[in-house]
Image 1: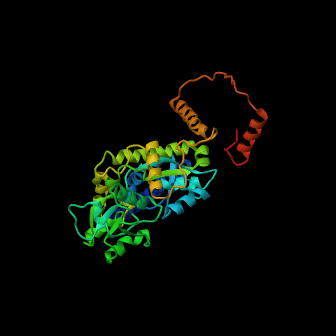
Image 2: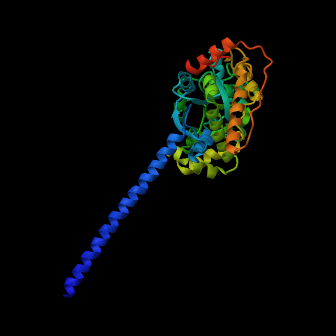
Image 3: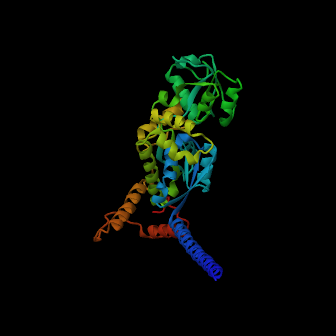
Length: 398
């Protein structure tokens, strides 16, 4: 009798466990479905933006902070990050429309503008304000001077690119003629210079990270100078977009810039250790110690701007560097807008005012206005219809 009761109790316990387990599984699945649905709905409500970056580098830490901290999502943007592996490829992606925004050296937009494009690329936000590469020697040189490069061979960068032009700019600032006083080897691909140097090629090499740090770890080279420190502040890398895209999507440009600004705020208010831990998911191939060492180097030389403003002084300096390098076909006006293009900023301000009023729940009243200008209503209506239904051709639309 006792055995029969024990068996019945055991069967009852097993049944309850199974029933509870099934109920719990259904609830768990239901909860998961709700979470997944919420996530899908949230992603569907975000504005899709494709960003093409010139390279994936620790040098661009504020951008990766913005990604990892979710600042883009907070600004309503679903960011798709693509690496272009070269300014020419990134620029091509922006011009062709396969990328909405490009991130590259600020000089690329000047080259494109001088080619005569009507819908040219505009730099709208700056990220880095110093060069991100370092001069590496075969031996330690405690009291290094740039004149030590005279009659030496250096592995340099691509002709016309910011790394090479800033390097030559520093040489000229120190009384060295890049074409006569040393040999600059520009025949080696950007990503292969560290390996070539390790194999015994040249006396010095100009390296980005992690190339410079890896050469030191392998005891194949020693950092003797920072190009970022010795060049001073330069508009090194910027975010840019087609003029037409900026005109058609002022809200996206503003929200994108807001996210980048948050990334800049973070790197300028946190330690290198905190920054490196935040961006670590973006650089899984780099160990924590090396990552922190590299971030510390960039942090100490004041690499990242405190705001995204691309100032006229920075723009003029950029053109001076291009001019000295023999790469500037003609100077570009910082405010080189025609009458229609100059309306962009007023248009953006108007839209942001509307957003502010609606978001704040403010009451307002629309007042009638009288225009004192002579208006060609026929042309205006025709242009409006063309812009509205004919592909948004904003130039000359009014």
